[in-house]
View: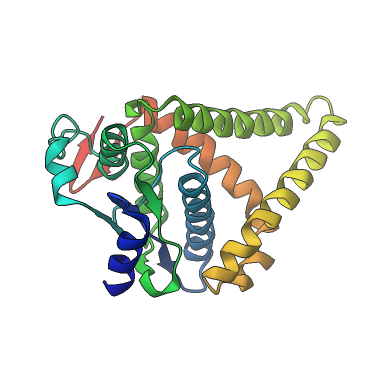
Length: 233
């Protein structure tokens, strides 16, 4: 709390996002989750610090009571099954432009648990994807659309290769470039979270990441998911 209070005094921010780390074991599911979540945390920190768009995780954030009540808290967004943290962040940002900050400090890292089954994992990620249509920030919506379109294009290239084999060379080339760029971005993030060992597995998990992004993104908009014991459309 002292670190957050000192950061608040230093920046005069009314909304502070902070780092979250996912605990994991040696299983495929949990190492993949931890790695994927680490990527999201890196993007969150970069996007908030560079004021590109607004991202946060509800497990670790702080905001002024005054600002919360000025924007009527979760009113008009409390019916949404996922994304209330980021939607609140957007509301406060609209009321206080330039007053959103990210606290990049190991002292305030919060640990969260990974999903225990693939069903639970996909349900969670579909729920996360479902909030995309609720954002009124064109920058974050555009970024999400471009990421989804890129992964769909890679998957289409892979499938088309079964009929035109030379396309697999294109797929391999684009995947290699994607992997290198993402590793360069991810290295300082992994170092911050003391998870450099996960980077050795990163290239192997690329195909899995593409498949899950396409599936979760599609079902998040057009499908349904389980949340808190009920099915949400």
